[in-house]
Image (cartoon, rainbow, N blue to C red):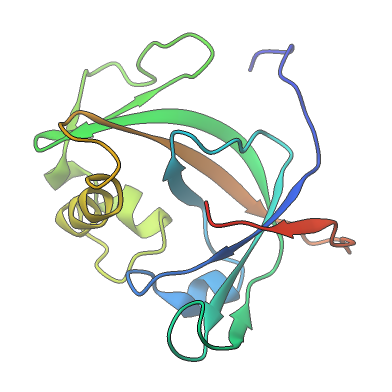
Length: 162
């Protein structure tokens, strides 16, 4: 770990889409989330997820997750062939191998809290989420590692569409 990382404590409330397996997230079992490269999440931020009773943004909120703290941020590059995790501080790949094929990313998909816990399910989600924002692969995103906050946390949040 690099010691000159800036820590802050901002809070974000993020809606969950239909690709996610909601129950484990509400129980506090989510390990990571992949967000837009433009998102400004940093280590120490607090996130809470929620679902909708009906049509997103046109119906009341339903379930809310416990609070999660962002414990690490890494850049993710992906294309039709696979995914590369990159340390945002150095720009270097985090893994020895250059790219991991989608067939080897089932654990990443499970950690992401997806209904389809396979690398191919992850590929479908990431491409549907990011293709509209970027014209040609490789696409860039941020992977946030999360841990459930067990202690009492006073919400200081803001609504977020990240």
